[in-house]
Length: 162
Picture 1 (spheres, rainbow, N blue to C red):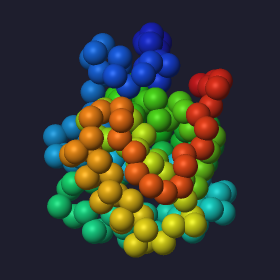
Picture 2 (cartoon, one colour):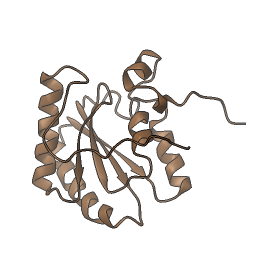
Picture 3 (cartoon, helix red, strand yellow):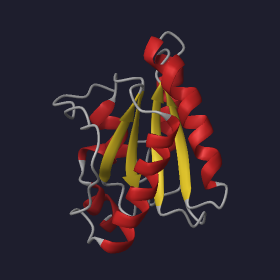
Picture 4 (cartoon, rainbow, N blue to C red):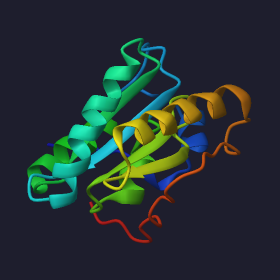
């Protein structure tokens, strides 16, 4: 029998933190920024951006940027991806962008707030720059006031059915 849980993606990341949700996916890593990648095998944009994000992440071998890959290929993989972030500050990002693929959401590792997005239109160098800019924003701007220049993130889902 499955245990009952309150879907933290319905809460703001700040409230989820107050209720005890944590950044399990990146806990203890020392990363200041997390790139949340939404991908799927059937997604043509993913075939362009995923290798770029893979290459860009090599520039952060120091551990200052983490990456969570959320696979939206089918219901089973969506459920596995949800389990990766359920109970963490990144559950809100999953809920906000469920069904969107071929995008990387740049988030603050301490709060889960969205700082920016990268798409297939970005080069590897532009992705690296966006992640570096996000690190600077996290270090120098107060939580929930952080942002970087670049591609706007897609509008959050108004209704999420899990």
